[in-house]
Length: 218
Ligand SMILES: C[S@@+](CC[C@H](N)C(=O)[O-])C[C@H]1O[C@@H](n2cnc3c(N)ncnc32)[C@H](O)[C@@H]1O
Image (cartoon, rainbow, N blue to C red; front, side, top):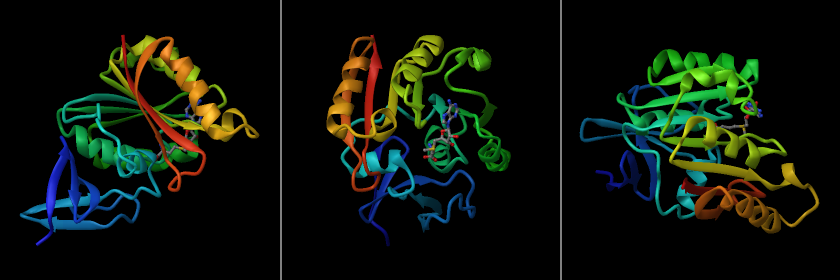
């Protein structure tokens, strides 16, 4: 019998590993391990494949994404992390997945067929007007490799009136030669002008030269 406890609403720890309750039992999204227990099936969250998974392992203290949340996910790629977010928000939540690569979108569309709380949007996250039909969300999660990633977050926070945010910062994308910690603090300072930063978590060794910054709007 596995040792399971819920560490955040919708996020579990099973024998020391983070996991979410599988919304589509029997189906894997990225070759993750499935664990059955007490009539339920959990998907083990691989911190090497997901920056949010890495942030959890590295000690994230609070998680704004909860059952029932509406989430704007910028840079969803083929849906590896979005699938865990989909598990967390559940049937009453919504995950709007913005992705501008048509190739990633093809895989994502297949995932959206299985998971009805995922809404695919082929658009450029730099241009929130392209998906203004989303209107308002509770949380923005951003993971785009773009030099302007912090400005993209600030623009989307304003456009969709989100209360909370999480952003994965890739230091080499912003400045390939600077010390990553200096880049993280610069981006944190930029965000702090418009919102309250709660946590800055360095994701090494799971994602080299990345951090996750979380916070809330004022
Ligand atoms: C690191 S990958 C995301 C991985 C994904 N978050 C996960 O954990 O499963 C970054 C993604 O952002 C997308 N992207 C980069 N710039 C973008 C933009 N301006 N608008 C939309 N998507 C963008 C890329 O095509 C890529 O799929």
